[in-house]
Image (cartoon, one colour):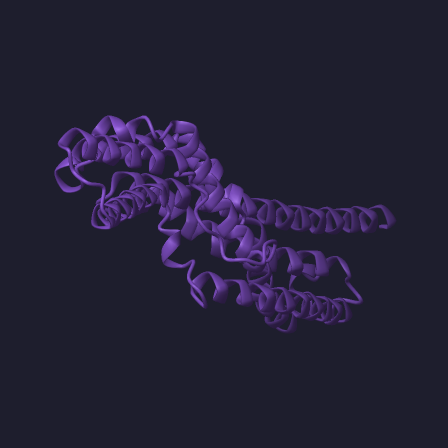
Length: 300
């Protein structure tokens, strides 16, 4: 009996290859909305390693080391920043950035760190120092104080920007371009879905005398597209590739590497689901073939 799997082999193979790349593109475009730019992909990963604790420790260390440069006592800074403020600032900035890229927010994200208490405590220190030294509180001293506050806030914000997102959150910067690209990607996704439907329709026509073959070839396309994502991701995770990133700041290193592993894990899950669907399609095809053979044997 003729091998049903090889029915119209060449046209099925050509259509299957096109479908494989379309399914790959659709998987990546789906991932853009639900993995790449989904805030929880990154916040959940950072929660697991308690990145806020690392950032808070960085700020404590800075508080102890900055006296020689700013003249602000370490205790003044330490009592001005608490771990809750650090955590809120870190996660809200990450969430706002990716929500902006997804189009859920219209304005560029900004740090939401509350420096009110910090500014008050530094101001009180300057006022006490002026009284203690018998120095008149002049505009020059006020300017020095404001410059000090600005420098301290910038240093703390740098520690809070654990994913270096401030580098992309600029007017007409990378985040804005990504936002525009994502809008285009959603339109492309609709076009690709329509194209996939057309190709599957053509494949169904090619296999009209053996419609079970449609399951096999669509399953083959899904299998190939899933492996094109699954294999590279498995290699990246298995070799611990991200551990070798040359980042000298421990907080940034931990945040970025953990986030990249979280992103890779999500892609592995997505491709695994696609792979399971592909295997089910192929198994269903094999079942149809066996049932057909069984019925023919019964007739004989």
